[in-house]
Image (cartoon, rainbow, N blue to C red; front, side, top):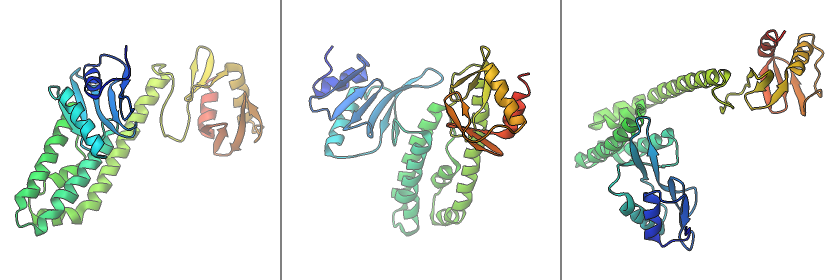
Length: 281
């Protein structure tokens, strides 16, 4: 199997997923698995994806970087143009990033131009194009378009843009509240799966760690295992307040004791450790 290939052949290999990786002789265009890049992993041109319904598609970037990257995009497009192509800002990015891109483009290139536009249809056309791409993207992934983006895309004239500008802060606040609620819901779901031993580790930005019993050992959400007897002794030392900063738990140092107890890179609330420990006896 050859990994160094001419541009058109490289794109063909990627489009048909005929091999795991490949690159051009100068390395400016390459792919790893499902994603093909221009110049580096910071610029994904396109990515093969499959949604929850098993529908295949190709996410294709709307970004530009240089003349060479534009040529790369053209070659990639030709190799997959007959596939179900879904446009977005960054095929390797998050839904939030992609929607934020459309939100900025819709406001800056479309809605904000309407108040002084002699030919508003030009800017309404831009909004309609963005709306079409966002709807296709959201439908494929089975997700909702953020309220702020919906509000911008619904603007049809000067008065509606002024009304939106007045209420923009409210839209952003509502969207943030909705996002936080979804993050909490997702965290609860992930914790439940982890506690039920459905996953080996809990990947989250939540500041606190959790514990579970797994095969007669205590396991943290960072996949550190502690002998059950050691866990019982640690519980007693917290309960009788004999645990001190600098004490060792396996190879981890106790760094803080208070309402929060920090052991190595782990952070627990004192009340949580006492509640968990009470179940070990």
